Image (tube, rainbow, N blue to C red; front, side, top):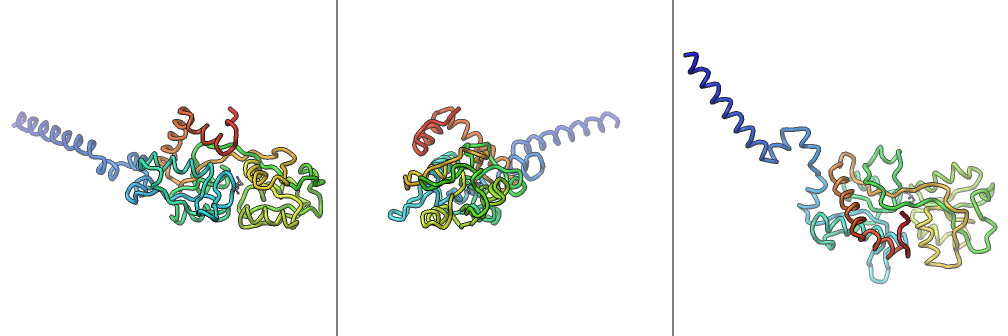
Length: 279
Ligand code: GLU
């Protein structure tokens, strides 16, 4: 009787162990049952694969990073090439991508509304933004500076005194930073960078402020404008994904690392910025 019971218990334990093995090999069960497994499943990547398309928020107004050519309708730039590399990595084809226009103001709400899978749009990683989205590692290092017409008396932020009009873009770190660093100046905010640049050219302001890389793109569009005063902030760019999409961010980080190792990253950088990234 005692022996029979023991044999029965052994059989039950073997059966349970086998069931356990089955569950461990079945990833759907694992994801459903184990909270730890949940953390490694990316809803964003699953959505992209089901849809067969990576829907990404990019700028349409920023020369060298994401600029729409009104003639061809094509959008090109450094950020676009990075976004294409993500599409290729996940879907095996860089053309399986849909570019959606975002501005500095609309990009976080659009990501959190589910309009886009990620933001690749000259976006600085900040503690404040980290409360709303998750960021990848830094993929570009910029710094805030000033753009003026050649011959302007403004040469640095020290010249942004009372009465000076500074142009910037809504939702950018640039307008916040300048309000702190030059509190006496008047800041006029526009919807996007092309509008701000048009306003500068029309004499509506004395200087335009944002990241050096974006201002460099403007000097390429119109050589009558130059950058002055050096960089007065650090603007490390990250790709933003929805909060909790740790696995998606990790996948992009691994891609960035491999692009840097293979030289693909440097190639893209040089294509748009005209020089190799400084190490
Ligand atoms: N990198 C800055 C930011 O994230 C300025 C560029 C932009 O407005 O996208 O706000």
